[in-house]
Length: 82
Picture 1 (tube, one colour):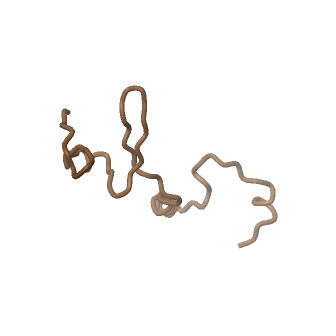
Picture 2 (cartoon, one colour):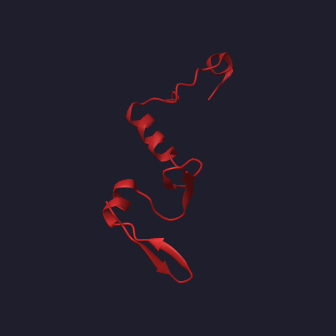
Picture 3 (cartoon, helix red, strand yellow):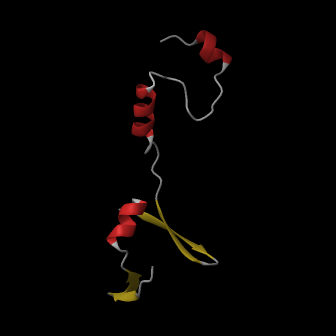
């Protein structure tokens, strides 16, 4: 997809088509990185942004085990009480 660099006040910018924004879910504050091939535009990863999704996944499977591959410690197996 092609785009034009346009004048925006004293700066320059590009218009990103709505379809690309919806597909990539980019919105709000973003991060720009310079690469040899060009500029990379990324969403800023917010701490705990995926917690809702992880809690829903755990609830679906009636599971309270970490899904990130973390190994349960001996303390967690034996000493931890709910």
